Image (tube, rainbow, N blue to C red):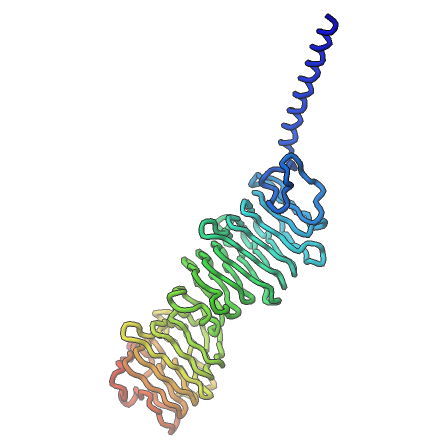
Length: 431
C-alpha cells in the first residue's frame, strides 16, 4: 500500500512540474523582448529553433516588436551588421555611425514594414552599406528622409513581383531619398516604388535606376550628373509635377523618348560647351538663358515650353541644329498662354533685345519646326548662316527681325522687310 501511495505522489509532482513549464512558456511569449521569427534574419538566425543567442557581437537582427506602433530599437555599439525585419516605428531620427564607429552594414529585410514619424529620418553617416531587400516597405512622415551620406553604398534590390516600397506615411509629402554628391560608392536602385515625396530621388551623384515606378511626387528625380550608358532603363514616371529637374546637359543620359516619356524642369541659366544631342522629351525652361558654344542638336518631336526671359544664344561658333520631321516637328512655345518668351537685358542693344533665338557669330538650321508667342523669334547679330524652312512662326510680339547694324542676315528670314523663306509662315500677334 505504501508503494502505491508513493507512486501516486510522484505522478502528482511530475504533473505539476509540466504545468508550471507550460505556464512559463506562455509568459515568455508575452514578453515584449521575446524573440520570434520576424525579428531574426536568415543570416543571423541560429540553426536550431530551440535556442536564441542574446549576446549578439558582430551580427544581429534587431527590432523590438511585431506591433506596427511599437518603437524600433537599434544597437550600434556592439554590432557591425544589423538586420531589421520587423513591423515598427521610429519616433526620432536614426543616425547610423560610420564604419570607424563599428557598424558597416545595415540590412532591411523582406518582412520589414518600417515607419518614420514626422521629422524622423534614416541617416547613413558615411562609409556604410544600406541594403534593402525585395518586399520591404518604408513609410515616411512629413519632412522625413532617407539620407545617403558621403561614401555610403546603397542597394535597393526589389523584384518585379516584390518591389521595395518607399512612400508617404500619410497625406503630407516626405522629403525623399537624398544621395550625397561625394564619394564613388555604388548607388543601385532596382525595382522600387517611390511616391508621395517632395523629391523622389535626389541623385547627388550618378547611379543605377532600373525598373522603378516613380509617381505622385513634386519632382520625380533631381539629376546632378549623367547616368552611365545602360544604367537608366525600364522606369515609369507618372503624376509627378515634374519628372526630372536638372542641368540640360545631363538629359541625354536618360536615353530616347521610347525609354523616357516624362517632362523636365530646367531652372536658370545653362552653358552648353560640349557637343550634345537632346532627345525628344518635353523641356520646361524656367527663366533660363541657354548659351551654346558647341553643337546643340535637337531630335524630331522635342517640345520646349519657355517662360519670360528664357532664350537660346549661339555664340563663339556655336550652332543649333533643329531638324524635325513632318509628323514630328520640333516646337518652341510659351509656357504661359498670357506671356511671350525671349531674353530681355538692359545692356543689350535694341535689335538684339527680346530675342528668342539670338545668334552672335553662331549658326543655326531649323526645319519642320514651330515657334509661337516669342517676343522676337530669330535675331542674327553676326555673320553666321541661319536658315529656316518648312516651319511656322506664329503670334510673335515684335516684328523687328533685322540684324544688327549693317551686318548681313546670313540667310535668316528678315521678317520686317518681307519673308525671304517662303516655307515659313508668320503672323504678328495682335491684342
